[in-house]
Length: 70
Image (cartoon, rainbow, N blue to C red; front, side, top):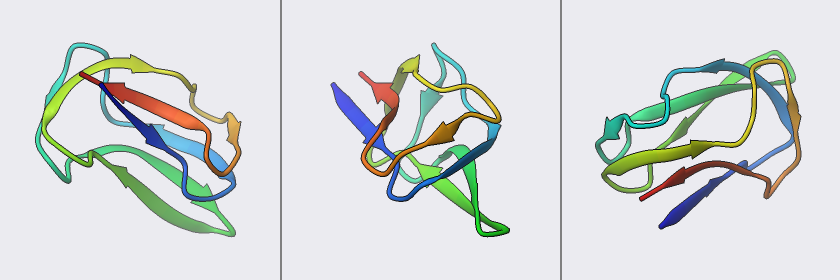
């Protein structure tokens, strides 16, 4: 199991993956917005999305778990 964490403080702008999706390494899981910039959050490895722990428009902290891959 791999936890994908936020690398910075920002808002969840758009979630592009959903639980059950198969993803490849470097696939975009969601996009964060910080200081008017869009920052893609990508999968560190191939796997299946088991959980998405945030919602769109939610503010996330650095180090917060966003997605869990199995």
